[in-house]
Image: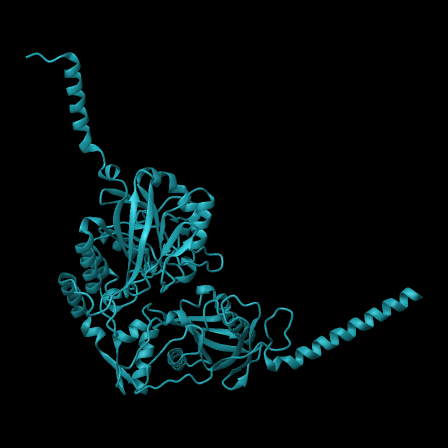
Length: 565
């Protein structure tokens, strides 16, 4: 039986179509595809469950297991927005290797560089990147003076999930060089985020079905450092909008996504106490990701089944550290609590320990360098303080740094503290009051006054011996006046060990908030600068101003007399 030419042609055409169909991407055939993005940020080495039953890598992994069982493992992707390793002995004593081991087990696909990733230096960080089964992203971290990236920095990646390609551009925080110890970011430049994203935008867009940012950046701007809102807004204005920003750094306990136009920004609190869950759809035809639902899911003991393999690995690492971390250094009869914007009993006892060891007039430390509280459990009247607990308070291995500062320089430091831009500087050996017209970090009127050292009024021309930490000493975290101190001496004595010895010698400790630093109302009369002059200096200033006015008056009268003559 013969087949006509037209039928043979039709049959051949159908065969070609049939052979072609399997190569059409599934997503294009089905339209938008649903995927789930699980994200963490600012875990800070908290692999273990905390004192209140929160977090823990095994519980995080258990929640990941639950979500995968619900939506299908192939539809889930794990991302981390930085500050992943630094913070707890179980991580720090191993330079973060334990965290990377467990993140590899859990199947993370990408991470952004946080500022604390640099705390152990670039060589250690490069080793952790090499250990990772996923790329570390930062389009804006380059070799200084170039647009080239260090070998261990990847600007962007494409992750395939559920048949769709998710383009991810990473960003580091531009303030990193100023808030890490001097020298740790030498040779690197942290470029403007919008410029860096724009450089790669078209390339990533062409290779992906949707484009998101994974950033160690909070939602709001901080001084000149752009936040997520500004980044999204500027990219949109430049015709380079992104579908989603996954953020970090600010430790924000956000109840819902922030929105910059059509771009959502999401963040998952801190310390592994939350895992963010973003249920999204990706339309490859439109190259568009749409956020359908987001939740900051609390990770709590008893509310999730821990992943057994991760639990065993955490236990193994914790057991290795126990001979060090469980050593008791002393006891406390009250909880030791920090306060970023006020005097705190934690700040008081840490600076007391520093001043006692250094035998100086004044001790200063930054509130942001105290990272954890030490709390009495319910019903506990005396708490045994362990080495691991004090390490969690001060995990940066900072050393005591002594110097001479004049009273005028000390006044500059206190006036800066009154802005609350970097919190209230914690102190010993000195008492002072401050005012701030908005009780915020962007005041229009602020200053320090009524300053006393050892109970005596601060003298602006007197030289005082001061101890601080080796992070503040070169002007870290914008405390630039410390860099001008003279007769400088880095003792190389670890402040945590100083603190441990002080606790041991004074146990049970019971530090209090005792009025070293007090907030007052804005004084009725201020100099033009808006910054107060110490009360004890006001008399001499008044005399000087009076004399100036008298001289000026005499000059004016003489000019008038000469004009008449």
